[in-house]
View 1: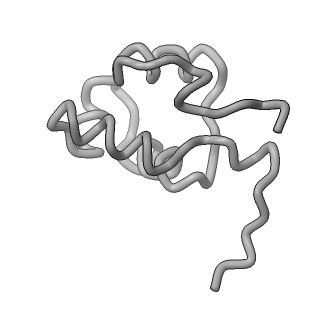
View 2: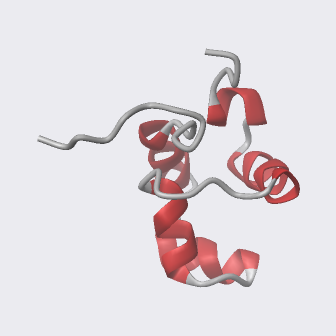
Length: 77
């Protein structure tokens, strides 16, 4: 079992991120190409290993057809 702890570094809703990406019929590689970033960068966001800067978070949310709040959750939890 993972010893990962939910904290400010782990705020993305990973299941939602993946679900919305798949609804767009995009692979991680396809998303990476659309954003001109590496596939590993998209993978690390989706796996909750890193959170993007705010500007990129807004781009992701718009691309996925959602809001930053929905995608990343309540930052005050």
